[in-house]
Length: 299
Image (cartoon, rainbow, N blue to C red; front, side):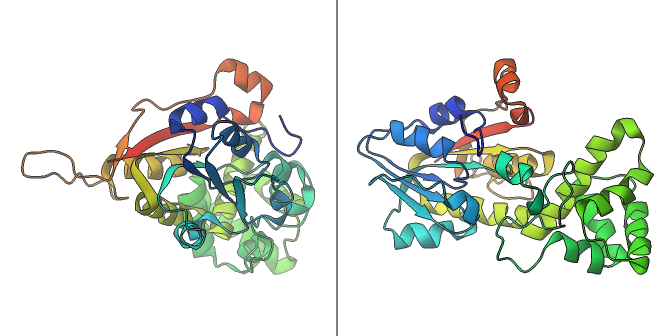
C-alpha cells in the first residue's frame, strides 16, 4: 500500500475498533499513515488524532480537516488529547512494530542487513542511542538487557565479548556489532540471533516496554464506555504486557475479584484467541508475519 510502510492486519483492526461514523479515534503510531487513512474512510463525520515522534513519519501527514497529527511519543497520549479537547475517544489503535522505512534506512541503524551507525532512536532528538548502550553500559547491565529484552541464552557471554572488544576500539557501526555477535552463534541461527540482539538494544534505547505500560494505563483513562483498543505487537515481551493488562488491568497478572467472584478489571478482551495475519497477507507483506492483534473494550 505504501513505499514507506504497509500496515499489518489492516481490515482486522478496523473491524475490531467497531468504528462509528461520528466517532473520535486515535492512531497512536501514525508511521506511513496506512491505518489512519483506513480509519478516515470510516468516519465521515468523525475525528482522528494521530501520534508519531519520528520526523520522517511526520512528513506523511494527511491533509484533512478531520485529522490532527501530534508530533510526539504516544506516552503523552492523555495530555495531548486533553489539549485538543478530544477526551473521551471511541477507539485507540497502536501498531508497535518499527516501519519498513525505518528498517530500510541504513543510517537509522535498525537493520541487521545494512551497515550504518549504531543509532536505533525512534525519536532522532533523543539523547540515548545504540552506540552509547554498547560502548558505555557495564557488562552487568548489558547482560540484563540481552537477557530480559532479547531473551538471549548466552547473554552474559555476549556482554563479555562486547566489553572486551570495546577495550581495543569503539563499536561504531551495525557491522561492527554483527561481527562480534556472529562469533557466538551458528550460521543457521544467525538471523534470529541478530534480531534478538537488535531488539534488546532498541527496547533499551527507546524504553519501549515502560512506554507501552504507561500508554495502556492512559488508554483506560481516555476511552469512552464500550470504547475499543486494538494493539498489534511483534514479539512476546510486548504481547505478554498487552495480554496481561487486558485480562487483569495490571502488569503483575493478579486477578482481582469482587465479593461475588467477578473479575474487577477496566477492560474486557474481545478476542480470547489472538488474531494473526492470513497466509495471503503474509505473502503480500512478509513483515506482517509476526504481527499479533489483541482487542479490548472499556467496561
